[in-house]
Image (cartoon, rainbow, N blue to C red; front, side):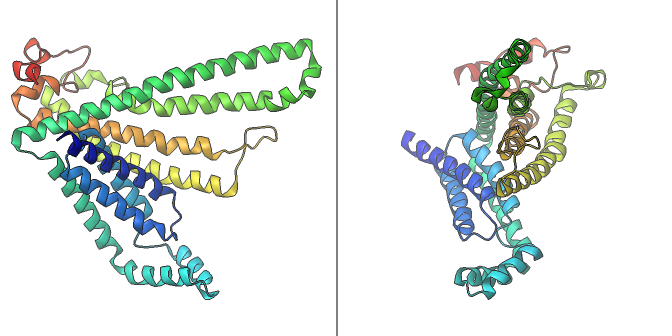
Length: 348
């Protein structure tokens, strides 16, 4: 059983790797179809071999996102025209791709819908192991995602915040030293770590720190809330609002930001974009890539919260105390009967 679950987890990790590769491949690459196949096969393996619930949930949501981003069955008119120009020069690979897209484009919406149904069906089947066990799987997936996001947030806080503090201290010390020794600006060291570069590195680190901690803050319920209204509602109503917010607002918003963020980062990579300042940092694509990555983390946080809300709303009473995190608040804590673990949960 342990080997089976390990192989299922490896399948989920493979799907995550394929999802990442899918979004960075050019749309006219022949590898895009094989990558979609690897993604789906990895999800199938994770579904039937019962991989780690958190890895499986992450692979499902990010795999679906990557398929929607890549649009592997259709190209835009501009991309088709560019591919046709290459094919007219006698490129056999371009001719094969052009023939493929011309055949598949009319059916692209239906094929994308079919892939969506397949991924959703595999997710439902992977979680469903009997009426009681399905909620245990959902809760395990939620807790696993929350643990991962917590580790990412804490690691980012330690590493990036330490680097940010060091950069600020160095910037201040160097500015003071230049008042005593203006010739320092002519050294190779200053050219490497000029005031412009250090200041740009400060906001790069700050932006990355903020983005990496977004998901961590949400699973810890640390974002600002308007408690004046929320505290007057019943616990189930609060959870319904949380669930609706995740599915109707957070996931679509993350999708839009990730889609345009990936496109923006890829464009920056292709043109070799650097700082607008002559002495600034090169490789601007690095910080631009942090935006879709940060929103991928908060999409996983939304997945974690939504799963926990579903367990609270539809799961058995024995799991209520483990899934009531978003039913209450710091000002309005859970009653004793819902704040203590029941014997079933303790035994588990």
